[in-house]
Length: 152
Image (cartoon, rainbow, N blue to C red; front, side, top):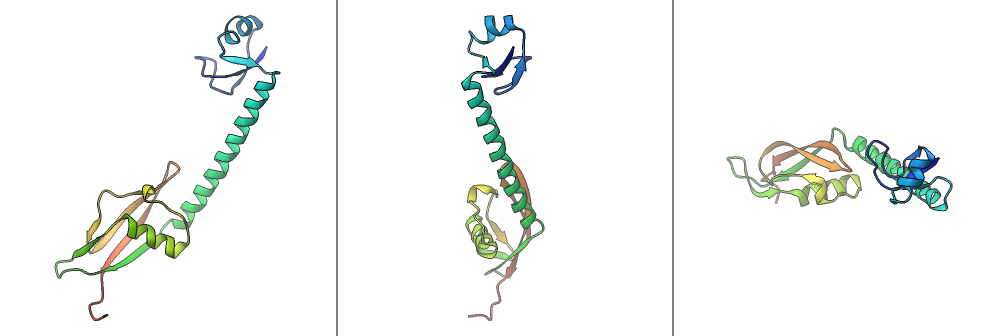
């Protein structure tokens, strides 16, 4: 008998898996325990339709993530900032500034939760910032330079 599993069954499969099992196993164990439904039932068809829709949604999401990562691969953002002679910034460059620069320059939506940043950058130099989107990560460069003091 063909059944669709409603939850994980050890050594048989996970939710939504279609399996062929013996009639006795299905009628005496899987069906009464609510672990599976007959493949021909309307509920099974709804489950399978839902699983197909979820897979398509995940594929679209993964495709969008890959497109985003390819767009931002190897970019460097430059931030002019006021700094002391020692190279220490008067005001740090944090997540909000980085998000604002990416949004302005590349016209894309990115949230602060996507940036993995332990602390604000407080010195002149080049730094790496990790962006995490849908379980995938991307590293971009942040270049902080001393603002031209003659500009007023």
